[in-house]
Length: 582
Ligand SMILES: Nc1ncnc2c1ncn2[C@@H]1O[C@H](COP(=O)(O)OP(=O)(O)OP(=O)(O)O)[C@@H](O)[C@H]1O
Ligand SMILES: [Mg+2]
Image 1: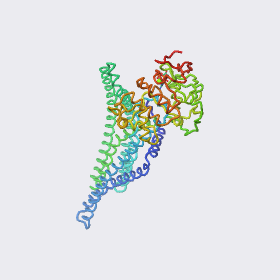
Image 2: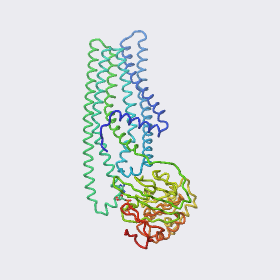
Image 3: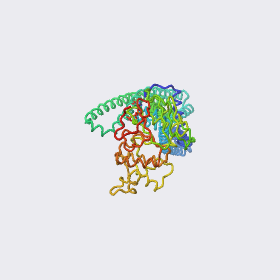
């Protein structure tokens, strides 16, 4: 996504939107935030009191042997030590509180992203590059916490310390010196902000490089097999070497620019420190400042210049996090699929699925041109046709995942056009060609779609129907099969086994209608012939896409889907390939 410069209002709105996300997903956020701010304020107060107590101790020493002076020296010196220790230890308590809040904020954002992916309009998700998306989520998940940290726990205490130091200096040294002190610190602060604004482009360059890296490796890691089988190993390596060289160049250019800007800010802060310390020394030499005053002024100057220097990198990070937050919030702005809740499906409706004049485009290209189709209750309706003809798109539209531009979809007598997949899926189940396997046992994968865990007997029966006992070793054993681990993404079982588990998963949801999109393509024809009748006994109404006849020979109705149009085929499918002729 291009990184344009957003207006200040837009940036503030981004932060408030993010604040709302944190409050929504992290229940104790407001309370924890308040407590952390109190801790930060306490540390700032203690830090401001420390140089003042030092001054009092030194001035009490200067009073020599006057009565009670030694008690005062000891009290102020002790107070100085106690104040410093309390500030230093509270600083760590503050860090621990902030770290725990930041981790929870990160969790809140990851939760929000996940929820949005699950609810986003499917067509919108199809447009996005998963690698870039992952990179943007990773960048944004920590951005809100870091921004909050910078604003409230880095900038705010420094400003408090600055105001308190000016007040103390005006009262106990000289109001003119306090004005100069305040003005010079303001100059450093202003310079820091100006410089940090200039780091935006450097951060944008680094962020874009990180997204490209995420996209590149997400795409590549999944395709080792294809790389090997295309004898493309060396070409891939050369490609990734080139890609990483460009990535390193982009990132180092960005970082050099950042370092130069931050070095400039450190010089500005150092110059102010020198001017203020020399001015205090001159005042002390002229007798305008006591030794205690001088120590206090030097204490304030050092105590404020170092946080101001740190602030420069923190504010520069602020820019980076602003960019990260904005990119992530765009993901949270993805339009949601509608959820219209349950509707009254007419179980007795003879027309299980009815599609009228359905037309839709995918990314500007027409995929369905005006499809008319009826799938009758208790029947197997087969969709066949050439690759790219629009079969999967039609099924996605029937499932409510894609919204048509024209036409209607009725499921069990109910018009579900535009109602979204969450409404449709209450009556139907669907199995894709490459189904999701979760890292767990066969039983866990079978039960994945059930709101309530199925009984062991149900699991065993469905496993037997789908001949999953072959997963239980030799001799085949259904109990052992259910306990078998499938591995990450189901990589420890075969493609046909994955498909049979996915069909079992759909059957356990007891749908009224079952959609199969080449869901048996990896199953041996003779096995498909055996298991399809068992599937149909469980769910008699089925809409299936298939390129072969195995298991689908008794289809009641066949539609040829070609160039986004549906043609009812008069003939039942014959054995062999369902050729796309018409
Ligand atoms: N996400 C997408 N974005 C843009 N166009 C798409 C997208 N998915 C599919 N298409 C296009 O829509 C048309 C229909 O695709 P579809 O996947 O429905 O075909 P299909 O009949 O299922 O083919 P196959 O038998 O190969 O699975 C094709 O021209 C395809 O290139
Ligand atoms: Mg398809």
